[in-house]
Structures are given as C-alpha cells and as structure tokens.
Image (cartoon, rainbow, N blue to C red):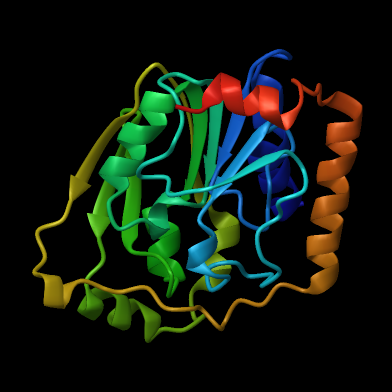
Length: 236
C-alpha cells in the first residue's frame, strides 16, 4: 500500500491536475513516462545508468525530443503544464534546469527525493540533498565524505522509510518556482554520480508500469495533433 500510494500521488494524480486541453511536457521522461504528457524530453547521450529498469528511454507514447533540461529548444511558455519527476537530483546545475522549466511552462509538478531519504539510503546517482521550506526547494550539494559516511551504513536504516509520511518532495507550482542552491564545496570535494548497482527493478514491474500508463492514455488522453503540428506549435 505504501508504494501504491506513492505511485498514485506522484504518477497518476498530477495528470488530472492539468486541464483536458492543456499541452503537457514530461521533462526527463526516461523509462517511466508520464501518462498525461504530449511531449517527452530526455537526453539520450546519458545512457541508462540512472534508470533502474535499464530498459532505456520510452520514445513511443508522444512526441519525443532529445535534449537537455538545462537548455531546451522550446518557445517561451510553450506548455501549460510541465512534469519533472526524479530528475533534478541528478542535474549538475539544478538552478539552470529550474529557470528553464519556468521559461517553457506556466505551471507544473516537481518531485524529488527528500533530504531525509537521501540520508537514510544515499543513491550513487544523486548529487544533492533536497529539502522543502515554505514552498521553496533547497538543494545542498553532497560531498564525497558525507556520501561515503552515509553509504557505509548500507541498508541498516532503510526500514525507517516506511514511517515517513512521504519519502519524496511533491511540489505543485504556478507561475514561478522558489529555490535555493547551496554549493560551497571545492570541485575535488564534490560527490560525483555513478551507477547505483544496488537497485535492480524486476522486468515485470516495468512492464506493469507501461501497461498502466498506456491504459490511462487510452481512457483519458486527448491527442493534440500530428507531430508536425506539435513541433510548429512548441519549437523555436
């Protein structure tokens, strides 16, 4: 039930917060595309190291754009709603990513792992501890020494996660996103991401996720036009 609740609140419900005729983009779609999106953006050059299913980017649901979240090819306010889930913790410059999200979209949803979750179970591919205070996202850069100290506990405290109200920060925003980046580390001291081999997702879970995503699209999604029409509408 715990993980089912997270799935509903983070993967399904945000789609119903967007209006039926809203143009929606999924920023950093990866292997878990957002069912309500019209446009999907991800950076193919990154490979699959940060995708626990290791199945690659799903490119067949809507218009797929290969690009960088920090600098996209879209017009100002091209999208009514943007969805960005479990992406910013991987980005070297989250400030640039957030500025770009605000530039290309009017409203949206952001989900990232909480700083507490990162302390209990630090991920090899995450660069930041993230916190939410007064609706402001706060990013604190992980150091090598801090990550190694936390990682040395392995899964000793992982059972604490089930006592959390939510291990994720789930933020709906309108017009602007308040944020702060705390990074006073020297380059040598900064933690650098690597593939997290501890987390392996069973193939059937990925298949189930895609089945539910396609079912939701069949029931509730409204096509906004051909890819050529879409590109003309959103691209610079």
